[in-house]
Length: 293
Image (tube, rainbow, N blue to C red; front, side, top):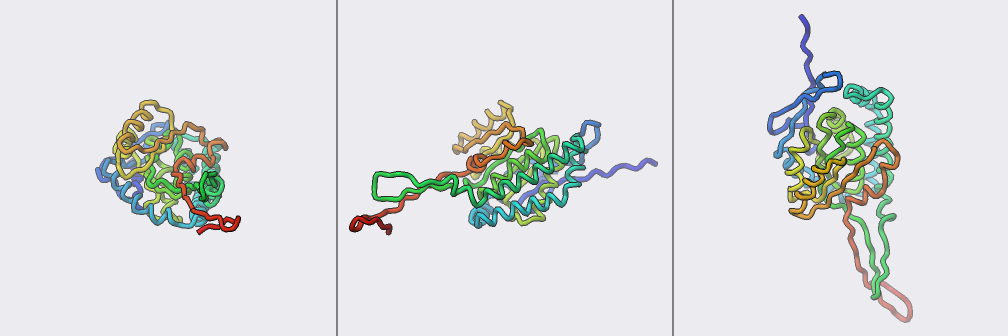
């Protein structure tokens, strides 16, 4: 008798755990050969809400960590990804990539994590400033994390678009809820396994599979989400994001990049998810000298 293949069930990733979707639903995306990629969780609005709760709970501890420690953790993610290159390459090829393209995508993903790891303890110095003011004060501007960021990952790539969106968000001290590529979901959950076995605290990154069209509205309208990152150029989706975000004036960041290219990584993707905090410090002139108090 011909043996029936047992498809792997890919769970979602919320709060450092791998639950099945609350709805109990799943779907079976196909590759170019018509083969089923697996049993993929079809996440619901309840999963979105649970992810936001987990992300908010993790935000305080993550944002207060030393910047160089966040950089070390991103570097550790890159190390873990390096150790599982073969698995990611195989998954990319199963989803339709050539071996050469798959190897390049994994290598660029590793390098991108290291790139943002290097910025973790440097971006404040580069982006911050001392501002001229017409009073007896020092005036400093510095960048602080926004909070919980919703991420709609690139739908045309499985790994590099996901990594390119997550890395700058968490390097700057934010936490995130990520909607992965609907039809190329395998690397998203395998990357969640990498995160879970590295030093990333539970809840810092939460990854949901399923239909972004179904999850975008509950994520964008959630009052505890501070900003949204959208990777793509679908005008109807961008319009939906902007309309939904008006409820609590979320910042919407949209990127339409070829994520494999080197210029798809830059400091400004990190600063886009930051708020500028200005501090006034009084000074006093004493006998021609300036002192602070």
